Image (cartoon, rainbow, N blue to C red; front, side, top):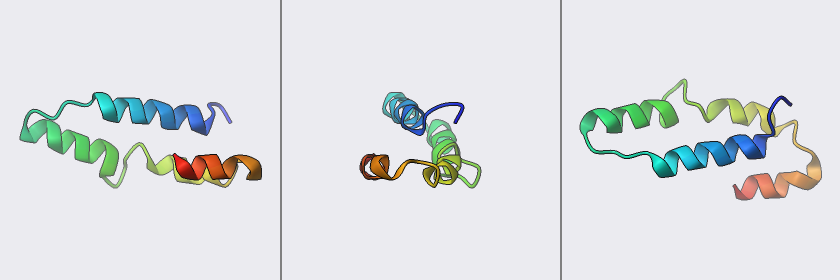
Length: 62
């Protein structure tokens, strides 16, 4: 893997925590980025199958 899935999740969590929703436009941008059909979280699901069995429990907690 080019970048560890755990690192990717931490980066996304940091971005979500730092996101400031101050208007309807910024709320819509948040929705599209994290919940839309082409969101940045979706590719992580494909990587989950590649995680070693002993690390899957930790991945599930995230």
